[in-house]
Structures are given as C-alpha cells and as structure tokens.
Image (tube, rainbow over all chains, first blue to last red; front, side, top):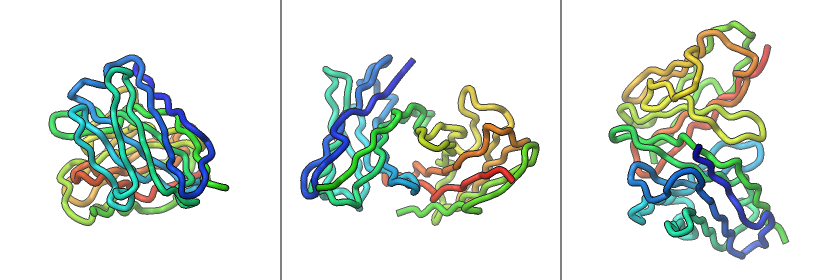
Length: 122
Length: 107
C-alpha cells in the first residue's frame, strides 16, 4: 500500500526558506504513470495547488508562487521536496504532498500524505 | 487561470437526502474534473475522477456527471459519514485549480 509522509520544520521565520520533504513508501517514485504534487491549505480555507514534478524532472508551479517555489525529486531516496523562499505569514498553512495517477490522458490525486502544519512566525 | 466555482458554498441536509453540488469552470475543461471529500483535520480523499468515474472503494451512492464547463456531484442517499467539505478540481490546464469548496452540514 502506497503511503506518503511529509516532514520538515513546523516553524519558519519570516523571510526564510520553508523546506519540506515527502517520502514515498510502497511504490517507486520513478514510475512514469505518476506525478507528484504539493498542495497547501491555510486554516479554515480551501485547497491551493502549489506545484508538481514529473519523474522526468519537468515541473509546473502556481504562478502566484512561481518566483519563490522549487520542487525537486530524489529517486535514490524515493522522495520529493518543496522549497519556498522569502516566506511571510501568508504562507502559514497545512502542506500536503500527493501522488497523481494517470488514467489515459487525465490525472487524479489518489494518494495523499496526512499533511504537516507550517507556521511562519518570528 | 481556469476558475472553478462551486455552488452552493454550504448546504444543510438530512440523512437519507439526495444532494447535488455543482462546479462550473470558466472555460471548457472537457472532462478533466475530479471530486474530493475532506473531513476536518484530514487530507482530501478522491471520490470521482474524469468527471464521472468512481474511484476504487468509494460507495456507489456517489456519482459525477458533466462535461465542458458544468459538472455535478450527487450523493443519492446521505449517510452520517458523508458530512464533510467537497472540492472539485480541474486538471485540464497545467495550472491546476480547485473550487472553493462546499461544506455539507447536518440539518
């Protein structure tokens, strides 16, 4: 059974870089039928897609975050990572990692991590 | 960006009711539409993919329909465990977007 687990600091100071890792167990992160995403959710609000990475290394980011976000994959460790620079209080949220599976040409997020809360505060 | 608008934003219903939630895209997304259920403090769970395909393990009382810009999620007979927030998501664009959510509450 595939599982995703987010890890990283729960508290980040303003202007610093938020760094999170999503470790994948039970399947290979290298399969080309998947891509890997980060989604965040401020307290009491809706879901915001942060970005994704394909196993080829190709990435797409939310334009509202594009200048600050980097997603990378480490196939040797079966994990992918998120870095968000110059954080402010507006980046405080629960951060989820998710796997998207392909059905013909469409994708859907069928496996999610439990989420990790990141607070930006001095 | 493709904007996804759900209606209603919140809904009160009783166990056994039939409930429909609507999601409208700002442009055609063909059938690149997924539905998720989220309970407080938990990660979202996939219900429906490709507008109308039921994800494995999801009860058959959930169904999805629509294409182009208008989509619906229907729960045929509400069960106590269905009270949650529901999100639609489009994956037509390389910029993935979610609807704002529909909170389904017990009447």
